[in-house]
Image (tube, rainbow, N blue to C red):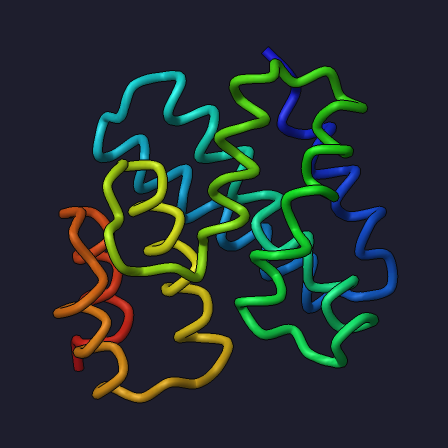
Amino acid sequence: MQNINELISRMVSYYAGDPKRIQHFIKVYSFAKLIGEREAIDAEAQRILETAAVVHDIGIKISEEKYGSSAGKYQELEGPPIAEKMLAELFYPKEVTERVCWLVGHHHTYGNIEKIDHQILVEADFLVNLFEESAGVSAARSANEKIFKTKTGKWLLETMFLKS
């Protein structure tokens, strides 16, 4: 199994000088890991989930350069080829890389979430984005109703944003 810490180190170097982006992916990774483990997903799905959580926003840099925007649609378009290259350099298996790249290309797509790794990645990213964007209680309630499905993700959302 590839060392997740090597991937994290590569991503820290990739985002050198941008602590906001580094802290964002570290937080998403931590929440994704926690949710996946508490939901007892299988080991391969957990490995893919954690890998995708680390690289999920890898397309932001090029999106900002090419389009002057970090909008989700640009991240989903530009991120997979960069993630594929980084994972290949670290000798990730093809099937893991393919799924991770698919997740990178769909982590802002909330309709038709069919697999648990996608659901958990979206939930982890939402947890971090709600905080980083200082979203209000109404946004958290809406996400709870429309996005969150896992027991652990709902618990985290409710505990962090909906308890007084």
